[in-house]
Image 1 (spheres, rainbow, N blue to C red):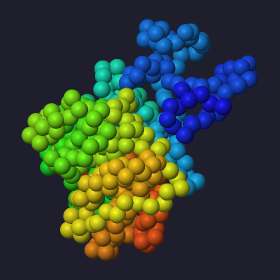
Image 2 (image 1 turned 90 degrees about the vertical axis):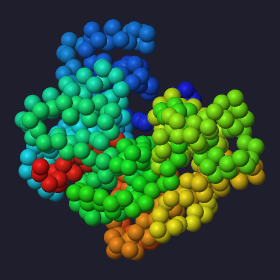
Image 3 (image 1 turned 180 degrees about the vertical axis):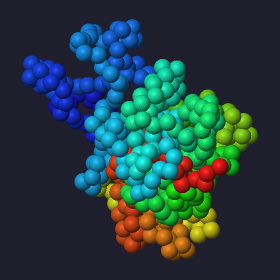
Image 4 (image 1 turned 90 degrees about the horizontal axis):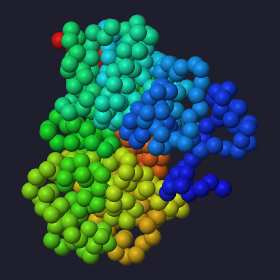
Amino acid sequence: MIAESVAPGNRDLGVMLPYTPLHHLLAARLGRPLVLTSGNVSDEPIAFDDADATARLPGIADGFLRHDRRIHVRTDDSVVRVFRGRPMPIRRSRGYVPAPVSVGWEFDRPVLACGAELKNTFCLGKGRRAFVSHHIGDLENVETFQAYRDGIEHFCRLFDVRPRVVAYDLHPDYLSTRYALDRGDVELVGVQHHHAHVASCLVDNGHTGPAIGVAFDGTGFGTDGTLWGGELFVADLAGYERIGHLAPVPLPGGSAAIRQPWRMAAAYLDIVYGGDLPDLAVRRRHERDWDSVVALGRRGVNAPRTSSAGRLFDAVSAILGLRDTVTYEGQAAIALEQAVDPTEQGGYPVPQDPGEPLRSTGFDLVRSVVEDVRAGVDTGRVAARFHHGLADAVVGAAAGVSERTGLTDVALSGGVFQNVVLLDAVVTGLEREGLRPLVHSRVPPNDGGISLGQAAVAAHAEPV
């Protein structure tokens, strides 16, 4: 029997075997399973030095087990989900790194790809190998940024690489981007976030494109000044064309809407219903702030527009009363996946506009969710129908692009495709349509795989 507090609201448990002699000694002495977590304060890098640990962790740890051998490099444990009998990394770190990812071309010049802001990894490209780093974490504080810089220096020494090309995300405020732009005597290559996702999936599958690409995630900087995240591409490693996307909606309060998914519910519901919004529990729970948040979205004040699929999951999670606020990235979407009733096979119908595939998908799904909520349909059935409806929309959009282009390979990438309910439904639908889905198995679909995609794009970019 596992205590609920080990993985609150989550039916999945991660299990690992002892991988050091010390673990074996502890397990033998205690004679029962251990619940483990990393030695760090939330959002900070792992403490791997005795002095650092005793300075930062006394409020968390009751004691410290020391050793007379120093730890050379901090490394998180890897996290892997299984999809159709194959591993799908969620965090690629200990046990996988520093083993290289073999690529189907030659890096003409050594490449450093700086990765994204969240779940950061970096990547070195040399010869026919890409060395994707261990999991660094979210580059949101000085300590993690220093660990990032130390890691790059360590890998460059370890693999004898002096980068001549540096690839980076287009978001100007990412610390990884600033790091790239501060380097001298290198060629800089900016890579759009979702192109990097699709490129990462192509490389993961030994493919160079062109292919249809679906990139669903939280947010990434778009080339039109909005935040992308629900994207349909035709892409290869050298470039991409944006074929379709979810319709942009406001992000009321900017980053506050990511921490408070009910704000995304307000944004979607205002667009779908306007002044005729039905009486819903999510609005009653936030009656005091609802109108001001809606006004932010309507005026576009501190409310950037986003096509994010992740934010659509947030909105539905809040409408169903699963998560109004979150304490970590993706929590609301995870709650929605966990709520799915596996016996429900139906999905909400989502008409496709061949000229603008996926555009109305979010609004159609939210409307159907609200209708079922008002009708008293069980939350698990609603969650399942939402997943299946979104999957059908993705499949229909990809099939439409395939019909026009003749392409049959479909790369599925971005953090939303960590959701195995959605992924399985999309893969099944694509196979039914005679298309070949490409999914991740060597690097994560989330931003932990971005650096590999950046390196691939930089290697195929025209030299300046």
